[in-house]
Image (cartoon, rainbow, N blue to C red; front, side):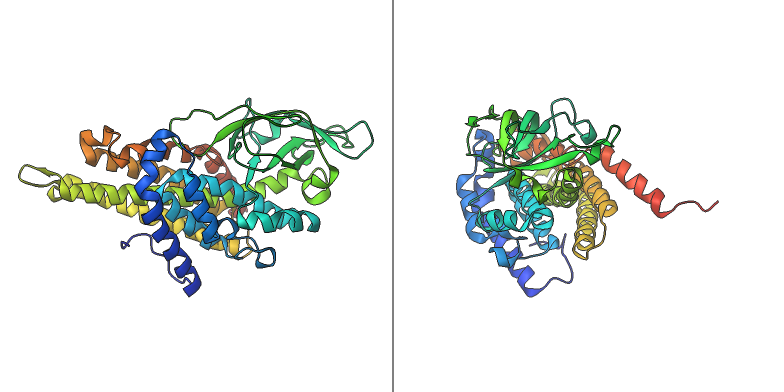
Length: 404
């Protein structure tokens, strides 16, 4: 373990968890990641290993069979896993967000029903906000949940969703829909949205009456994990599967989940950047030009210095954001900053490592080629860089409001 990206003030338990995860990454993920990624193959054995380690229940309270750990512990584990293969951290992230939303906002029955089996990984979570015609503009959602006409209290969901990570493999999807019933004309869009807990079988095609998962979206990177659409055609959802039991709260519930998800994406950026730095500094000491290792050339040393500084800065900001949330404070400013900085720095560190590799960086035989295709996803996942800057800018204006 190198000097970079160390975290001060961890407990013995946290250090033990991280050591175990790092060992798992080195032995079980790194040796097979590039091969599985090139095949776009789901990492079944890796996922089973993470289940055994208890990672799927890392932040689920002990009373529900989880480890009851902090967001910081979770983020540091994600950083390690993304260092091995970013797609694996994506498999965990959506599951974690749904579990967090249930823990924070679910009814007691919903917590009792879902959380124990989510802790073991038996139930796997995904969440869905985006649609084909919108991305960051959540208020423009058109998918609709309407009361069933038979008076059962159930809802019928209709619409098309996009960019579901784990859409095929998940068995529980938190779906955000518009529910306008009972709201006065002119109600703000974010006050007329509801999160529905949709249970389904894993797979593709029509996975239950009214619900179709067409298939995997073919992506430039972020392979292995399934990214899908979700099509609802009079999908019936029982009234007791409205998250929290009350309609109209979905926007707030989802934003709370996305806030911790942004810390996760920051951690992923930190992990990928760390791996790119490791590959770059190792290759720079092996490759010779003009009679000496290229690490002996000042131009390469400058790149390594820039890379290391960015790795260290991104990690520090990510840790601040996680600790702020763990303390019970609002962290949207810090999470936005961390996600923005870590994703941008990740892209830059990966590109510098790619340049250090020269022509070999363009070869699929070298791991840096995979990282070069993975890094761009972090620039758009959980809100684009531009959205993060809007959030940060607005919060700064709140904090530093002019008294003039």
